[in-house]
Image (cartoon, rainbow, N blue to C red; front, side):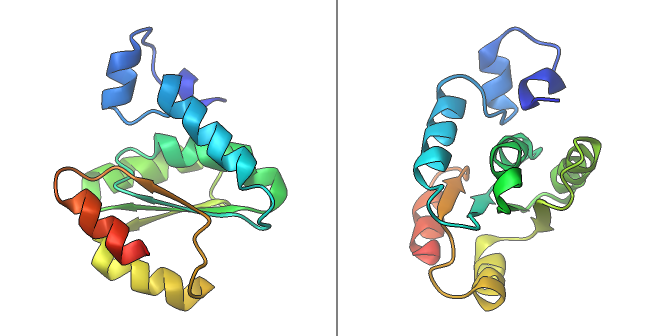
Length: 138
């Protein structure tokens, strides 16, 4: 099951709003994951995962290489939906959905995986959070 099949909608603008990794955004994600494949296992971190569709798309691409995706979402309802979608797609062994803000979760990721452990960082926050999250991740 692909991420694009999760919604019965031909309008890519609707899919983008929902956070789906389709169209141009999906192509960029695929290209970055392919170029990062030399890191094994690959660790992908998504901040602001929403419903988890980008995390699922990344997981589908790296699952066979032992990769891992950590998807972080501040909104508990969205995170719950993401957990259910991850389970529905059979990727619970690859995707870990966490509820919280980047200032809480990034230190945990470093403790678990080490400094400099993130190979691919996907940022979806709004406004000034983008710059702050990027600085924390560096």
